[in-house]
Amino acid sequence: TIKTALVTGAARGIGLAVAQRFLAEGWNVALLDINADQLRETMAALAEPAKTLELVCDVSDPAAIAGAVRKAAAHFGRLDALVNNAGIAIFKPILETTPEDWARVLAVNLTGPFLAAQAAAPIMAESGGGAMVNITSISGLRASTLRVAYGTSKAGLAHLTKQQAVEFASLRIRVNAVAPGPVDTAMAKAVHTPEIRADYHDVSVAEALPGEVGGAQRIALVTTRSLAGSRIAAAVRDALGARLVAETAAMRAHSPVEDVLALAALLRESRAELVVALGGGSVIDGAKVACLAVWRGITDPAALIEAAVSRGASPGAWDGAAPSPRLIAVPTTLSAAEFAPHAGYTDLAEGRKYRALDPWMVPRAVLLDPAATLETPAQLFLSSGIRALDHAAERWCALETAPFSDAVSRQAMLMLADGL
Image 1 (cartoon, helix red, strand yellow):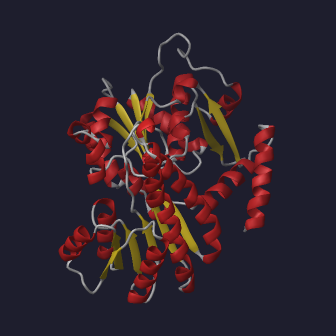
Image 2 (cartoon, helix red, strand yellow):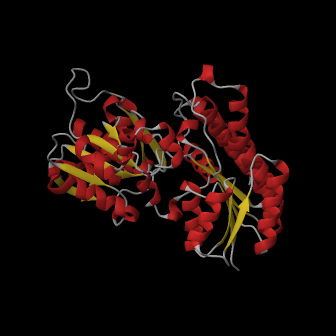
Image 3 (tube, rainbow, N blue to C red):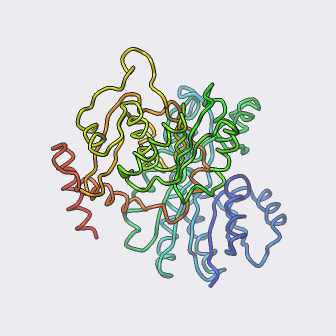
């Protein structure tokens, strides 16, 4: 059975790219946009009349969007995915933003996805479920000038996503949000100068890493087996060139003591001045603790476990001299490990997790490249509910270290067990 997706704001930019990807994957696609002329040109360029449907609609109009959703489902016989991408921006200072500006932006960017999802959910449920994706924005996560209506609408959309995810779960409909950073679209051209847009590429690891390593000439790379053959790992190797003197892909989940000490030995043997950690929280935490082991001269498991208790500062931590090696993190997920002065590691034999603290364990740089997430194998991604269960269970295995987290873990386990 061929699946069907409905993409709003599909005449150009991100929406068009999403529609093209669906078509490439063999889906039928209903392309919805308010701009009839541009949508007509897009449909002609796609030249897929049997697999596409043109829908001209204002997503903020309740009757119109409900009718468009029904038309898409009737035309293709089903609806499996909804991408709420349609959005507008009115870039003005707060004091110049009129009530009409405010209302229009929120109507399209926040009410539109609410209406589209409300119309689509019952239809998806009839076919056994589906998936929805709301396109939010980095502007919904952090404030910046001229975006009072736009940023607020996207922040609201992020929370709407959570509400939809909770309520639609019983219908077997998965709901997620994607918050793009800088993308060279028509909307970006309206607010960003050509000079700013020319710097968009600087968010990539390939462009940023050479400048971040500074004068370090001996660099080690640590990752996982699942990422070692990825394009992002290849980009890191290419960026480091001859300065890459050691590499390991042996760091396992939860940073086992054995893996941490093996990495520390590799860092000593290679005389690494800098470590690049590519991966999730386990890789970054493992690299942080391995650096700590090198700084403190730790070579055996007992001493490494003791480091979780001593909380002592590393040599040079208080006299201004940074210890070596230091860390650069290239995270594939945002686990908070990349920004924290502490790190977790596991004693597999005892089934306990320990946490070391040292101010120098905060990475000297964190490179957030979307390619790092895209390259992560799909099986490694966990839904938010499973991730919450994972963290609660993980903490349950390390009780009596902090009364507050013990209580939180107990309550989380009870809530999750009840939900399951």
